[in-house]
Length: 137
Image (cartoon, rainbow, N blue to C red; front, side, top):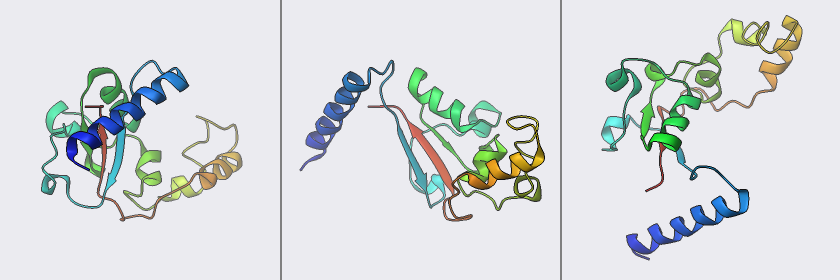
């Protein structure tokens, strides 16, 4: 199967998802990368380098969905502590393990914060080096 056939296949998948789920925007691509993103030759913006600010995963997906901007972020580009831990860019610090991250923001007690934070799925720390969000082509 050639590149054109593959592109057409995924374009049909995208259109089917749009129709079935009644999405307002096209689905985007998200990938976790285990190499330095500069080695891959991907044409995507780096938040700190190109926008002079760190971004959250939510902001990166919104940029891909609404503005067609591909983004690739390493630990240095990520703004949300929870996402840094969940995506495995760093080991969880004590404030994550003891419930302080969610306490006051999502929970009323530190114990409930600990239960919430410990229930979140986490990728192994150090497995991935970057997170990529890309708009449909």
